[in-house]
Length: 86
Image (cartoon, rainbow, N blue to C red; front, top):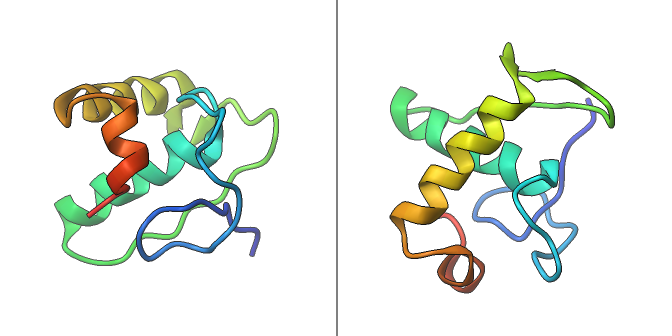
């Protein structure tokens, strides 16, 4: 199964956060998966491909919006890049 890589806790190691923003799937989809896992209390695995309009049954725009709200709630992207998902 394809996996997205990121510098976030308990995920597959891969691309870093430098120079990225929430429109990049390896950032926003991992945030969505993290938040979903927190809600469900269990690990979550998601996959998507370049050009997908939906991820996990949601429009990609909703995933980005959820990620942006999370980033804003923790003090911005710089704090997120410093600490990741914990």
